[in-house]
Length: 108
Image (cartoon, rainbow, N blue to C red; front, side):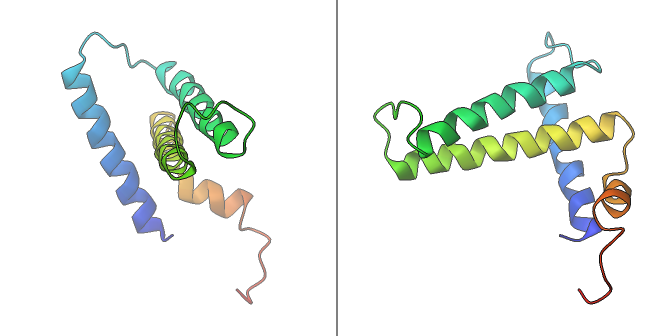
C-alpha cells in the first residue's frame, strides 16, 4: 500500500466520522473515544474470528456469512486505528518507516 493510499483511506474514514457525528450529536468523540472504540471493534472482530475458527457459537450463520462479518469488523478496527492515530497527530507512514521498515534490505 502506498503512502498516498493510506492517507486517502484516513481521509475517507474521517469523512465517515464527520457524518457519524452529525447523525449522532450526543455521542462524545473526545480523545478517549478513539482507544475505547478500537477496543470495542477489536472485541467484535475477535468474536467473529472465534466463530470462524469453531471456538464460538455459530449463531446459525454459515462460514461464508461469518467470514463476511469478520471482514467488516476487521475494517472497523483498521478504520478506528487510523482515526486514533490521526487524532493523536501520528504520521502513520513515518511510524511504519521508523518501526517496521527501517531494517529492510534494499533488495525488496
